[in-house]
Amino acid sequence: MSTIQTMQIVDQDENGVDRAFRRDVLDGLSQPQKAIPARWLYDDAGSQLFEDITQVREYYPTRAETEILERYGAEFRDTIGTGRAVVEFGSGSSVKTPLLLEAIDPAAYVPLDISGDFLRAAAADLQQRFPDLPVHPVEADFMREVDLPGAVRDLPKLGFFPGSTIGNMVPRTATDLLRSMRQTMLDGAEASGENKPLLLIGMDLIKDIETLEAAYDDKEGVTAQFNLNLARRINRELGGTIPVEQMRHEARWNDGLARVEMHLVAEKPLDFSVAGRDFSMDKGETIHTENSHKFTDRSSNLLLLAGGWTPTRRWLDEAGRFSLILAEAAVPRNAP
Image (cartoon, rainbow, N blue to C red; front, side, top):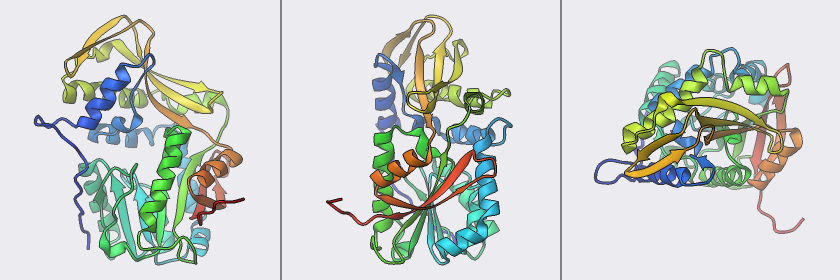
């Protein structure tokens, strides 16, 4: 019952190079603080490395979120109801998704992901586990509004955005994403009534710095390889000459911005080229590759409200490390 909706999302040049990837890398390496958007970490190799990260001891978010899904399945069913189309944004391997699907008995499942091969493999695995559930994988950049398959357009929808991926974005980008999610799921639906779109979203919580930094710098070095894979991807796809062996991974807590930052640090002065352009880095200079913002109840509520969603329920793991928040599409209003 699975169907594949193919979407043309990659704008490639005559040599098959993703123009957006090249533009973001060249622009980012030209900045005083070199920085590359975190979404480029997730090629097929990066997506698999991230799945490996979720299994390391220090990375608590996956275990905490899984605990919530396992413990509160009955509450999810009572609160969300059955018969919705579950639209998962950035589905990855859909490790946590079966727990939700088992709890709420959906009418369909629509995983969205930019990594097509990874998406289709994960969707096929999920289809085997739920043979009677219509599965409609959509290869798409979920950072923008997505046209959902016609088969689910008129169904009530539940957006699922686990893993605190929203924390990877600066507030402006996170707000834009939440708004585009709302528009994606409003197609064929209304922002009022009992069938208004819902969103179940994971947000990691502020805690002690040692725990936070360790979660992004595990002793096995899996996160380091995930970060360094970006440099390898640049070399492979953009003809880069970045000396990967002369760079190291670093995770640091930025208290003023309430986030863990990932950087690639030059261990000596470096000269390299990317797509025919020359760059240099001083010893200790970094390429900023990812943020992971952490939240309080108030800051998570404010972000959701700014993105057009009204929080209605919140669940925490037993240790209070992580939250899953249910929100409903807000009705637009122009006055207090």
